[in-house]
Length: 200
Image (cartoon, rainbow, N blue to C red; front, side, top):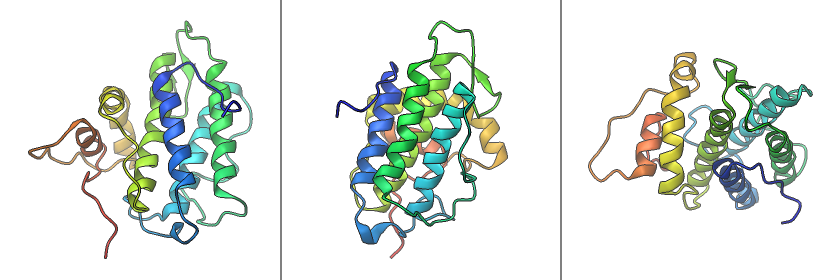
């Protein structure tokens, strides 16, 4: 895996790898299964997630953004899904690897459109990680999230999600339930049911 770029932010590298692995684990017949994103199937979630990663890269580098609106994914991929995901992840990783970690702020595609580098990288990681979870549970794969990563991403979420929730990018917080672990706490904060399963 020597071709994979490390960004220098562990949580972002973890989240990129999580998305990469769950995409690799989707069977050919599973790309149109429903997901926790109620209006989107697995292909559309991948298109959205890839578009968001390209969006972060474009803000950082000034290069072109995604060719398709990440919030109106077509549900049709012309090529190999793994290659499609890898192209987006590689662009994102290369962009973050070039960020000055001591910079006061970096441009990002989420409000307020400028953040300290570590928070910006966390926002990018959150996007990749939660959509990796969406694809995993939709296609019968284990959750790619760990308690340690979920705790870090929950701290990021508490700093960035409310403006996005108001815009409709995340559903309302779900109430905690007995037995929730760190992963469940993160998912509920993001408006996702940790026990979600595809409809019968």
